[in-house]
Amino acid sequence: MFTGYIYIIFSEQHNNIYIGSTKLELADRLQQHELNLRKYNRGKYNYVSSFDVLNLGNYTIQYIHKGEYKNRKALRQQEGRTLKKFMKMKKFNVVNDKMEGE
Image 1 (tube, rainbow, N blue to C red):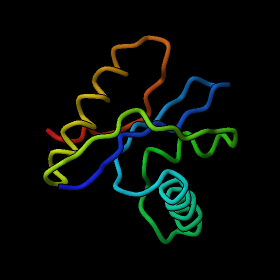
Image 2 (cartoon, helix red, strand yellow):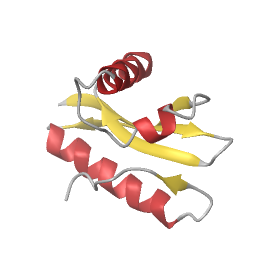
Image 3 (cartoon, one colour):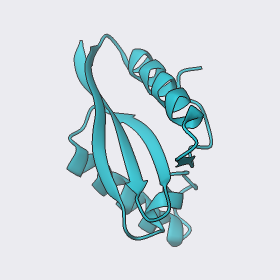
Image 4 (tube, rainbow, N blue to C red):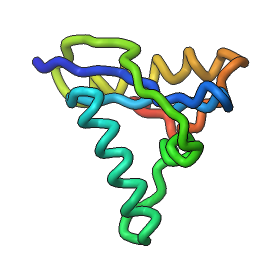
């Protein structure tokens, strides 16, 4: 068992959101997203849909859910359920390009 988190990166100005999951603390996970965006901009990393929010420049990351999970698959399934809930809300523009946990 391990502690896992479902998080949201969002831009209030544009209502764009990205939903993700991690075992890391939020500051560390956001730092990974930012590093990957810099690598992508230099042609050394593949596109990730979180970049659509990060490129807006004014974003925040927050926990949505914290839980105990038996494996990474269970965490990803929770991410998928959370993502479905946010996709039903018309006030957000969900930028995720794939559904985790399916």
